[in-house]
Figure 1: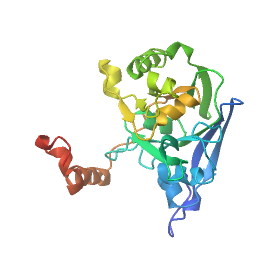
Figure 2: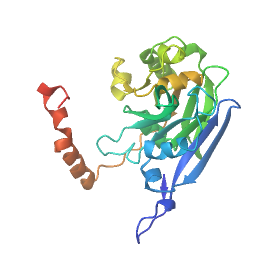
Figure 3: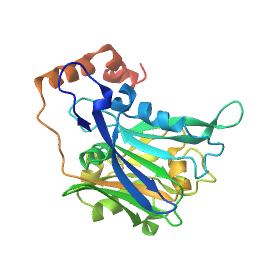
Figure 4: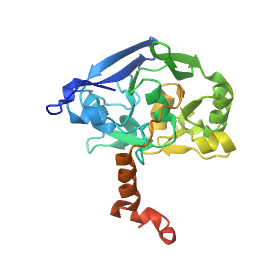
Length: 270
């Protein structure tokens, strides 16, 4: 993101984010800087993606008019505690309105994929259409800006999410990943497939320790588009932890909102 505010109040329209729009039907890729319209755009995540979803007339979650929007929040990739979120938004094959129409749903997960995507220079990806063959979206931090490409993914079919992540790690050792498993690949039979995101612990230990965006069948939407996963490559770009951030992290860790996660005998249930 780029912020040109320099005092005298904050104007959201002086903040730009980088969006990549990919049409899988035509295999076209377009990267552009987009001015924020409001604070929801600045904050990112589903607050931004739902503004786009509300402009779409979608009666079938598997239609080519239903986009999959993958984006990050303002704090993703920062040193702020919980700043690891990646958001997936679309019209769900699982949730419907009283009239039977698909409902707009967001799902979020942690892991390091979102940070790598943001460090590579992409704040948001909008995926349209459906690929004629299984593909990966590969995002890289290029010499002159973000580089985005489509790569064949036939060799990954049938592997579970952890197997896919390890296979991709063998090819892209400096990257992190977001993938679907066999449930997403067989999207017509499974409307609740999740998206798995790699973690540092998983890649180092080779144990199955990924994180999931599990709400609303976002893995099913990926499968319906023949999109098997994402690769995000970039050097780590964490800055030195500022004293203000340390204090904020302490408040998050010791605050009332995190009480249920600190008490071991409650198992995170409060």
